[in-house]
Length: 385
Image (tube, rainbow, N blue to C red; front, side, top):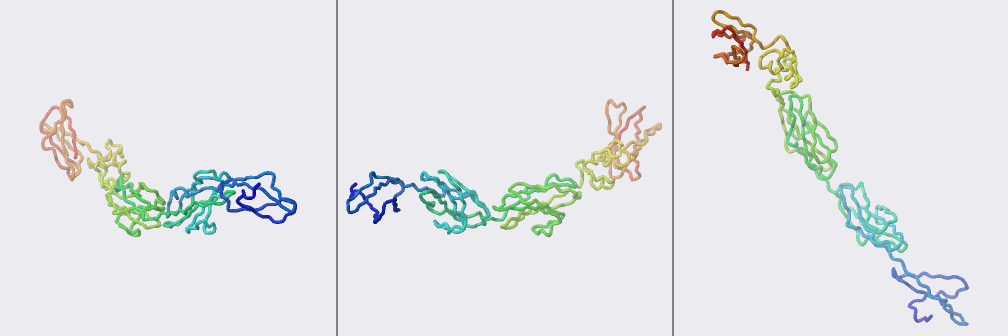
């Protein structure tokens, strides 16, 4: 109750009876203050019965954490950390934009309310950004005491797209007379959505899209391998292909064109043209099938020079005649083949190749062999190659 014991006073002037109040500013946060009312008139002075006290509130504390993360060409994650709520409910905001608004709310073009938060980290994703562009953000925390900004504005730059990279991944695979697998590898998207094609044909279009006969469009692709199955090719034909990729930063071709040639013969050595001459175009399957049910599959008929679609066209000995001095063997033959005669007298001791029997096929369609080494009986077989 000593006036000199108080450091501040607020004169309220002459008052009638009733309640009164006054605002004081310039206080320090989280500090206990004391006050006591005093009244005086011509009859004397009086203090309030007791001294009252109050403690000022603590402001929140916030920062931008470690800055933005997961930055792409068009999006980013903005991070912050509410390090203290000041003991009262605290609402958090993230202000951001292409210009630094500092600590002026109206200076920011965008804001995100994170709601009432407890102390701890927080983050928010933003999208629809422009590539290769600098953006700024700053966190703000408000409670009953005040609004407090992070101590500094944070900036980041969205990713700059570059042209993609693509190659032909080692070339074609699973090559048959009429089908193939074309392979490619998208090794980089250039930080942007990337679209992929394979161009192919019987001539090399190089790096000119319009010079290629055909293309396969794969659409939007991630980094990695891709392939396509091609059918309807022609046997014994050279083909070319080249991979192509494009994004907003540019378009690129594989460094070189890859070529491959469809085979001219089956795995058994049968020419595709020979098969086609008999209408057999399911090449591998037909080559290993007995189409005419004569006991020989097609590739064997090719070696024998017989018609694979005619059951009467067979590779066989057509006659054996004997005289007092020799056996005469005859069999169907074709030119371009060589025939060998084997003989056995009992089928137990095995077959013996006869001398001078590597005779070429005859244009007459029949070959003959005269065996002058007489025996009571003999077995013969013919080999062709």
